Image (cartoon, rainbow, N blue to C red; front, side):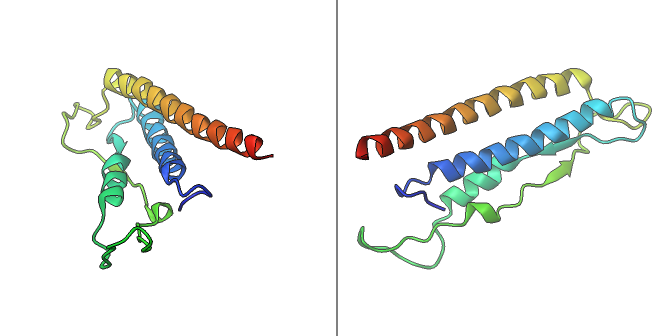
Length: 135
């Protein structure tokens, strides 16, 4: 989806926030279940899906001029999934959550969320400035 300027970046940033929010929930669940026997940690890898959608030029149409419509995949149709991670060390209680690793991932995810939020805010401000200058 494009905004009124034809810029797709706001849609991309919105989908990135969706993925980061889903990852935040998965990490929070991992931390909450750090001592739950048989619990397996969860993770969300939305970046690869988003990247594949952005690089997907194989839609069956060829554009040879700027005036041709280009069909890009609809980012809103992407489904980010929470997956169970089974390839890490398992403790005696069959739980594979490493609380130190989860806390590190929580901090990193929070910083990424702030960065994407800041970029989205800058885009809105730019659009707002343009609209106010047109008045």
